[in-house]
Image (tube, rainbow, N blue to C red; front, side, top):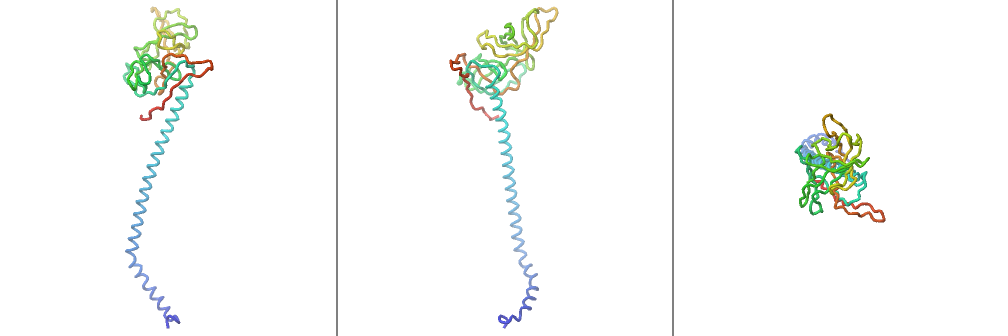
Length: 267
């Protein structure tokens, strides 16, 4: 009769209403278990995802820093190869590996050695001028003595009038000094000094420095002349090593041969 005439529908509704809280309480442990499982599972997933994002951010930051370093390196190389003075010799681009921190010695080590054709006395330049010359050669690296080393001397001439002199290093942060020039010498502040070619090590015409000041002290036979080096001795990271003098400018006017190898980013 209930199935045909639905007589007990109000009774069923009342019973369902009364039993609902009991059903909820009975299902509560299972619901709490599922909720707790979902909560902790989602929390672990969020922690894992967060760690992944942090790792990706760190990697992207490192890549960005490396990209910026490569961009700066590329700018330095472009400046180096497009220097203001025209090279007429073959050159090899080298990168600094270490710097001698002893203030009594102005020397650096580069990543080119005997296997690259480097030899003692080989001139070293940067984009602005002469840096020094090779003093020691090893199989895979070389030591370069800078212009400012107290034991280094380089023959120079005044670009304005061809006056010859010798520029001596005086140490870290100090200008070069011209030795044994009398008081009546024709030299002025601002004069450009270039290599004279005497001695056979440095080709003629490479910029060495600019006369910073000229002083003629009384009671002394020679003038005091200070020279500011043209090369950026404390900031240059790449430099040019001039290979054995060899003329290669042919009738077609081709540019000098420059050997460039990828630099080492392991610093």
